[in-house]
Image 1 (tube, rainbow, N blue to C red):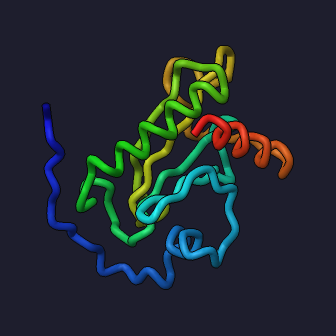
Image 2: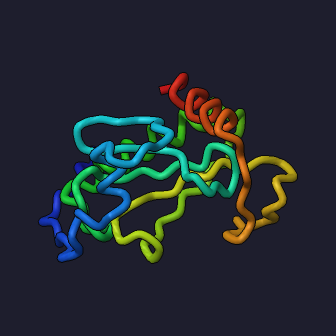
Length: 147
């Protein structure tokens, strides 16, 4: 059985007081919460690539996903949410992306893909969806119902 390797975190000097994801994690900014435990938070992206587009973040401020002290635990949460999304949206295709250029706080994107969703063979980062508040709430509840 393979065990996860824990690493020392390389915490960014970036102040968490100015970080939008830290503010969301602290409850200072509202979000469409999908999942939360002591270490991680998952919430819907407010400018989704598709309905259900979810961000998974550590609550503790770190700049890069690979600087996580326990990347195995992080990705177990990502896996849990991706599997719930597959059932919620009746798709086998969940794209996982790691960026860090827009917000300097570790985050993993989970984007459900659908037949004829307009993205083509690879996800089109410029194709954003405008969803109503009700549609966002429904997407979050759908995911939660399978966790």
